[in-house]
Image (tube, rainbow, N blue to C red; front, side, top):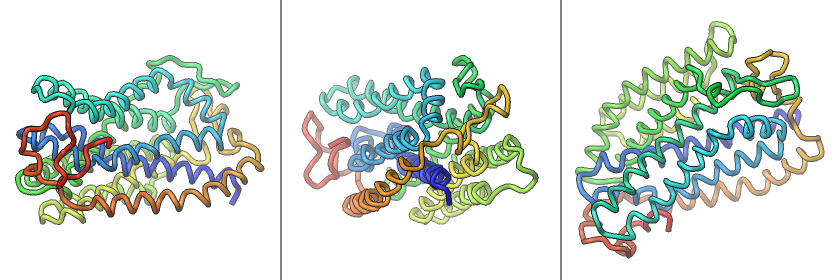
Length: 349
């Protein structure tokens, strides 16, 4: 296998890993004020992802860095053309991270409520904007013969790309609600299950429409590819599992659905990395955007050494913080201090 193709696969895996791991974080961020009826419940919901969210976001940084190192022309065209959207994305990420840290600094209801709104909005913006960008890669944006973006901000928002963003948001909500059902107890767990059961059919229909639209956009014939089939089956499988109370299996199904949905875009995209709506001759491909062979060889050695270490460390983190979180752990008045010693560490700590 050529190094350029190998690194396209690595980048697809990194983006898939980001959506799988950060997807439930974002879902919890959008749902934390919905599933909870009081401050103790909201704190419990946030603490389910407290030890995990910042580590999960590292996948976004690594995915972008890998694009820069392995496919500099792809990185340059995408990040310069999508610059206004990237700024909005950074705002969403910053607001979300700051909300985790600052909502507990004062005990006033208005203070906490304001940060809850910002946390919800930030958690919504991130998957929406990245989903739109993912859709743009396949649907196409204006790119000239010099590999430079030649459109405007409005060209980023086609019907397909916006629908991709909405589908990713819905899947994050479903993914987050199944995670909350797996990680919480009592009423918080019951409400998370109820939300998951309500959103699952809507998400399933959105994924079916996405699969059909994606395959049509790629123009690859009648038969859908394997990831597209898995994405559709996994969402409806999660809906069935939720009805039987199998929280772990339901979360595994939403994990599989998210991974398959993102992978399907990259499968349909290859050997292109970015489609030009101006002229197909101007498409960016794996071959015409890749770094030199020596650089790719060095990167391959680095990833072969470091990626297993990162995976082992993250798996260990998930194992350590595997216990359920209960709202009863947070019923005592909460000020600027950290949660009780019996609770999971506060978000961002």
